Amino acid sequence: MDTKEQFATNVYYDRTFDCEAAKILPGEYYYTPKDMLIVTVLGSCVSACIRDRVSGLGGMNHFMLPDGGGSDANSPVSASMRYGTYAMEVLINDLLKSGARRENMEAKVFGGGAVLKGFTAINVGERNAAFVINYLKTEKMRVVAEDLNDIYPRKVYFFPRTGKVLVKKLMQTHNDTLVKRELDYASRLKVAPVGGEIDLF
Image (cartoon, helix red, strand yellow):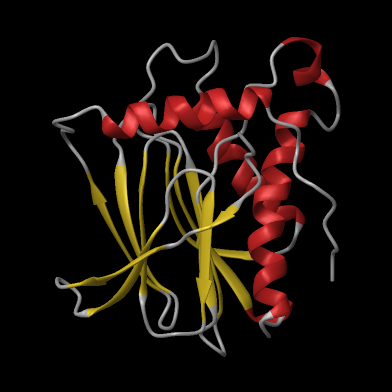
């Protein structure tokens, strides 16, 4: 299965917030100029909520670094780092193509919880959290809020137009849908090539 970042297609009407909403799953992203909500549930994965604070154009991604494993993990730019970079660039480039200005962009980052116990020798959630912070620092994009690591899954509600984010920590998950979804996503990442070429603006 191809793991290139997919533009989310699950758009619905959210009765709680009385607005249109897009739900994103692992490996998906969504951006919009509209006054709507983008929502996701994160375990070990991370999401960057990025918006142009002047125009209100914004979006969210949801990704995990593949387990580099072996000697690849020690290379300066491992395959997993390239994958994370690709996941970030897809969202940022689509925002730029839609009229966002780099100097007006800001980010809020979430996830990286230790919810996949025994998943890898090192905590995949911590790796994801460290990656997204370092990436944004390198890109000189201001991080205005973060809620990373810890042991809880999170449900994240992002309103790009205003920049408002609501985070609900899920103290108990009564089913294992989230863990199954992330494990399935992680197994797809192991066999997939890193995403295609990216044009940087």
